[in-house]
Image 1 (cartoon, one colour):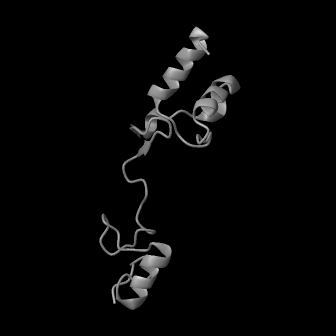
Image 2 (tube, one colour; image 1 turned 135 degrees about the vertical axis):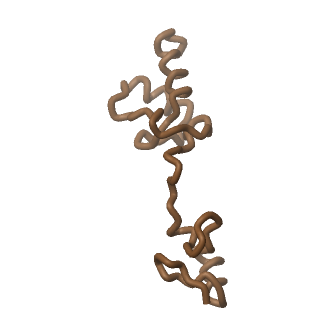
Image 3 (cartoon, helix red, strand yellow; image 1 turned 60 degrees about the vertical axis):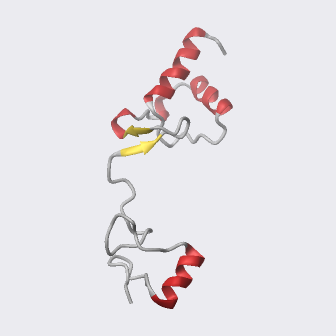
Length: 105
């Protein structure tokens, strides 16, 4: 029986099939010997912008803690699913900053 090298969860056999259906546990597509739960999640230093969906380099992320509240409210109004503690790409940030500057909203 194949097992994950990290958490030792069964990846094959009857128990492996049950775990695959119940908790969606399966062998990793990228890392040989690991399950999908134990594989490294961020190996590239990139993330998906939660507003536009583009893949962005982590160094371009906006730290929302220091952003102005009005600016954040504009984003929340257009994207209620947006979370302040997650990253947003500079293209989207620039778009909302431009709206604030031009007072189009």
